[in-house]
Structures are given as C-alpha cells and as structure tokens.
Length: 366
Ligand SMILES: Cc1ncc(COP(=O)(O)O)c(C=O)c1O
Image (cartoon, rainbow, N blue to C red; front, top):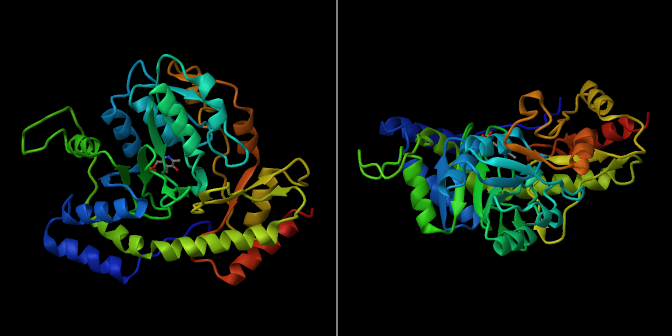
C-alpha cells in the first residue's frame, strides 16, 4: 500500500528526546521555548506560542481576543470539525459562508453580506496547505473592525504574496501526527503582537505569570519539551520537505491532466501551496462516483483519503444547534461529495508517483 501519510523521525529527534529525558524536565521548558523561536522564524512571525493541540490553539485565539457568548465568528463549512468545535467551545455563534471551488477555501467575495452587528471575527481555513484569499479577507476584516483568526492547521509555511500563513491575523497551527510538521499532538499560535503573545502565554499556564500570581482565568494548554524535541529537526529539514511535496504535486498534476472526469488541484496566483493534501475533484463526466473511486484505489493499494466527506455541520449532533447559523453553502456540499486526496508526502519515490498516476488513470477508465 502506498500510504496517504507517513511519519519518520530521525536520529536528531532521538538525540533531542534523550536530552530532554536526561534533563529531568519533561514538561514545558527550554525545548518548547526553542521550538517557539524556530517556528516563529519559519512562519515569519515575531512570536510563536506553543499549545497542546491545534484545536486548543483556535480556542485560545478566540479567548485571548475575548470573542465569546453573543459574538459571531464567520468560517468555512468545508473543514475539519475542530474549526467548528473550537468556536462553540469559546461560546460564540458560528456563521458559515460558502467556499470557492478553485481553492476550497472561504469565499472572500461572500463575506460582506454575512457580516452582522454581532460578528466579531472571521476564521478562514487554509485547507490542504493553500492559504485562503488572505489579502481580500484581511481587507474585509479591517473595514468592519473584525478579528482575523487563521485556521492554518494544515498550512505550515504556506504564503500569499510572499507573506506567511499565520501572519495576516492570529495564526493557529496543528502539529498532529499527520501534519507536514508534527509533534504527535501539538499546536502553535503566531502573531506579531507582543502583548497578545504575552497574554497567550499567561492563558495557557492557568492564567499565571509568577508562581501562584493569577492574572486571568486560564487553562492548562501547555506543550511538553518531549513533544517540542520531535519538531525541532523537522523545522530544519522543512525546506527540503516542502520542495519534495511541491515536486510530487507537480508530477501528479502533469500525469493526471487531461483525465476525463477529474480536476487536478489549482494553485492560485501569488500563493505558495505546501501540499498537506493533494486533492482532486470528480466532475460530472467522471465514470465513477467518489465511493467507487476510493474503493478502487484502495483495492489497488494506493492510499486515498476523503477530507472531508460532509460539510462540518452536517451531522445530527449539530442539527438545530442554537449557536450554528447556516447560510446555503452549495459549493461546499458539492466539493465534499466529490473530493479525494492522493498521497503527496515527501517519502514517495518516482516509482510510487508513477503507480499513483497509472492507477488513477485505470480507475477512471471504467
Ligand atoms: C483544518 C483543521 N483545523 C483544526 C485542526 C485541529 O488540530 P488538532 O487535531 O491538532 O487539534 C485540524 C487538524 O486536525 C485541522 O485539519
């Protein structure tokens, strides 16, 4: 089976983990601080604040900005459910705005009519490793005086016009096991605002700056040094990881272009895609539906993922939720029914890429 994602941690990660173990300080300590410095540099932000997962990063972002009960947050319906859960956890109301089929991200052109007197923040999701249209979204948030919280869980190092994901607004990244950069479980927030970074550091530590001196009602959102040690070598290797993912995506697009019934992913002008996922769309001409496509790929031992099979709110547990405001989102529904992701990770060989291409072509013939 060619897997959709693979994790390999090398000798430098082993060395750093051992260093942490031998230091006797395995909770949050100097390795987390080092990880934060290096992550901030990677993203191009002045500050990075590590937390225990990406969902926490989103919740902490809303909490630190004091977005909560009575406020609305506009986001994308085509996302991992964590985006929705984080807004609900913060006590705010979720308002969904449709996506564009070009980039699978929040439609910047549809934002203005969705802004109400209660809107406090916009939370675009940089799905699959490509940023949403941040310049246009930031223009809308500026004009309406709204917070911009980026769900950059899948977009470490992605850029728009040379500027990093997580630097337009308050950036929220995930370091979950399948992400381009991983600590198994982990998250990071990024910002240029020193006061905000300071409040986040206090918030993640039970609201405590000095021992038993509490400044706000906080939480335990801390990452551990053991986890941070895993990420540090990956940050150093990241340019090579990205170059491999980008080359693989180019090879897939070249090999799959012209296949009837299949649309390859689009990279929008000015945006650098970091290829967390390589996601195709099955069009009306496709001879197979998505279920059949995935079954046939799996049968032929090529990993194929569906991210995500339904829009985030389309589950019984969210139906008639008093804090979910749903506008019609036809593009998101359509894309959720027709998307499928193929392996694009850095460990694929030229032979793997050929196999993926040949297999897709075969499956799409029937
Ligand atoms: C778009 C998106 N948002 C939020 C999250 C939440 O991150 P985590 O799983 O680290 O809590 C994820 C990752 O799983 C994600 O893909």
